[in-house]
Length: 335
Ligand code: ATP
Ligand code: FE
Image 1: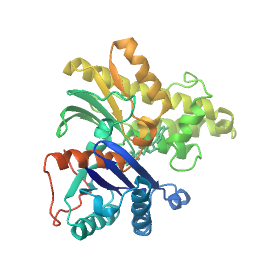
Image 2: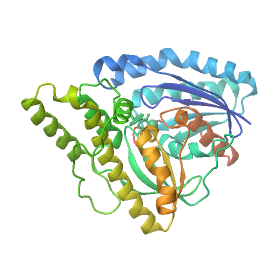
Image 3: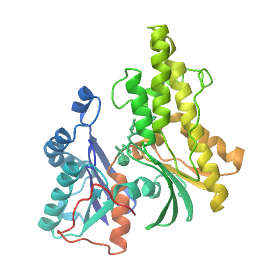
């Protein structure tokens, strides 16, 4: 079965071709325009999607070495995401499925971040159900109990900012360009994670909160810059390492609680922030430290990509979960 997948929920236009659960091509057209604005500008994102979508799909098919007539289905991101961005992907997918007379498969972006683990890769062990997924991205922070491909229950989530925002806003405070998460990761490698102490927010149960941490970091930096204008430059690596350290602690605390409460000790991470090397290392260590089995996706399947949309599309195809062309994009959706 050949599936073409489109992802256009935010600022990257992505297309992939899968043969069953294997990825034949997986392309992303990044939109650098947003860097100038320090964040994603929705209006500019949808325009760029319109320019990029046809060439990206074309290239994905070429790279996969197949003709569009060989496709069995077309998967697209239904939501959550920016409405103007989602509409470009869904309109394209609808037209393409009509023209080729093949099934249309609507995919939940957050489920896709989780199910990316089921992409068949040589040497990659897939999780077995049930497992816990920690989905950490630019817009979400969730702990999900995953009992089957489409049986998911959110057992904890952020009550305010997402963890990706905590990274990006910290980067902004330090004068780093958007998106700053990967840069903090890079600087943190050279720094001392215990150089500066930040406190964890007090949130009951499995929920998270990151807005207080952001304010704490802002006041900390402002106070120190007032005393020494070169404070950021002189301490960049240590600040990044310390911030990353507290974020990892917050995530690990809740994961430990989730394992305790559910009795499930298989942990899979997903979403853009799971590209973070500190988080990846800490989770690997948890295997020996706590006896967990952890699943860490390949980098290209962590940040937004179409291969993850394709793997969900493939599962939907197998289960005959097709949509007709009246299906609507949704800026927010639950599972
Ligand atoms: P959502 O999936 O919630 O709709 P999104 O699709 O915009 O949000 P992703 O592409 O999944 O988000 O993730 C982007 C986020 O990941 C950004 O906040 C970015 O800074 C962060 N990120 C990417 N790489 C790293 C890294 N190495 N360390 C920390 N954060 C990172
Ligand atoms: Fe995402």
